[in-house]
Image (cartoon, rainbow, N blue to C red; front, side):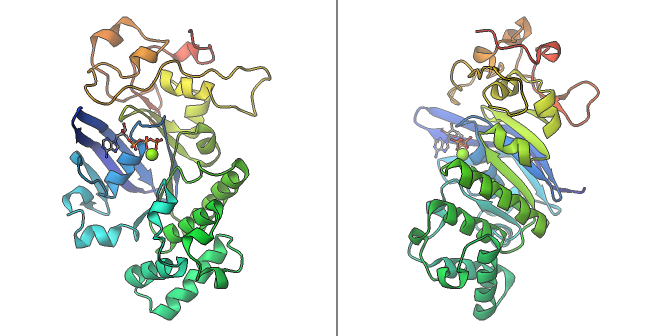
Length: 336
Ligand SMILES: Nc1ncnc2c1ncn2[C@@H]1O[C@H](COP(=O)(O)OP(=O)(O)OP(=O)(O)O)[C@@H](O)[C@H]1O
Ligand SMILES: [Mg+2]
């Protein structure tokens, strides 16, 4: 599979009165054609900001202060955020389903107006063809009586149905990449599962790569081909979904896995939350940000700066950012 997007050393900071929040601090990753990538981590670790940066949707006091976003032979960060190049990419070649659906749907326009607008703008359809396609898209994502519902407003739809509209809208211009930021967290688990299943089917049908952003490892286990685990503005572990679940090697990933309920495990396994809280992203020490919460720490962790990502021995796809030797201790419960 060819590579579609490569992000190198992305850094996005927010200048606040309390200091500089390093929300995304040296993030690198890539997305291949037609694959599903999971981006996982606790609240506040920089998942949304990293994805909004790729789309150049960062507003003051935030600023992308460094890095590259390579897509179709260009570094997107060289383009003006509101210039013609970014406008022709955003929504059309790289689309995003935002964390808050109500903020991304315009409440005073009907769903049809919003869907057809995209099709007219990016796909150069006339009004009639766009309306027809919009109804088709709404049916595809399972909205009953689409030809009627198209003239309803966002508030006429339930949360689950609104997310279906968002999926339809995300895929309407046949993007190369769809980024779904916590697409289902506000919904009940049954609806969540249905929507994830729908999203998987839809991206296969459209041959689109999907980035699922979530704090729930359980969600990506089932859908992602590869996973990036993020902590305090950095990727701390990446690998195939199999690597991450069968052979997790960063203590943070191991901790996350201990608090995910799993069906394939022996009965009586205790769910152990990771002790402590994620760090404040202002005035971060140069050492590993997970150190205060880590039960595998070694002396070196206190003395040296947080290491770069390096391959787990012998595996060209599995990377961690850690000094500790976690190899033999994978199934051991965390010491408290
Ligand atoms: N406008 C802003 N001003 C100051 N800090 C901000 C701003 N927006 C985001 N941040 C900070 O950037 C960090 C990363 O935020 P981000 O929204 O990317 O987290 P996240 O991983 O998506 O979390 P969640 O799972 O809750 O969605 C957080 O610490 C947040 O406080
Ligand atoms: Mg977020």
